[in-house]
Length: 187
Image (tube, rainbow, N blue to C red; front, side, top):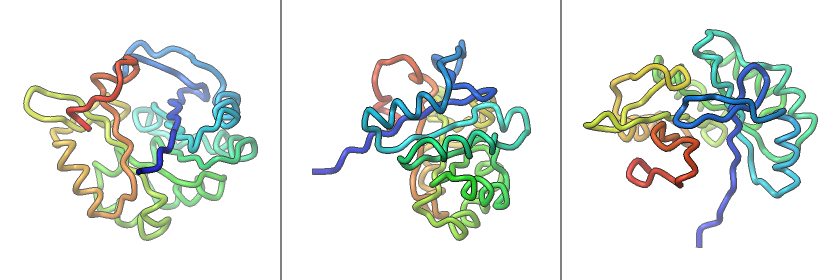
């Protein structure tokens, strides 16, 4: 039997955890450190912190928040959002994150996936894929779900695996936050 891992994904905007439905109607959901500590106390296996506006706002990840999280929790945690370079990834790992994830930068520059895998190892590289059904195929979106890219999500998942991604963080934009379960056709 396969082992089950429970991973919490915390969307971060302006240093706060936010929740939305289908990437819309974003509302404040609390302090990321307090929520991470509570999840850890409840037995979570891993936590993913997604800075959901970093790419759109063309800014770097909130390194001070990464450092504060690393000081407070002991479960593995993954950080991403707005990452564009290996130098940024090194800083995030030095700040205490166990893994990093890429979305927009990977789509813009697929070679970066291979380069990052060489630096941090495939096991520490996650590719986030935000996808939405466009009537023909599951289409990849970047910039926090704001920009359709015309890329087939299933083909993209295969490609990033070949490039060295160790994990994929798949989000269905059509069911995100609806509490209706997994998007089985996409998965």
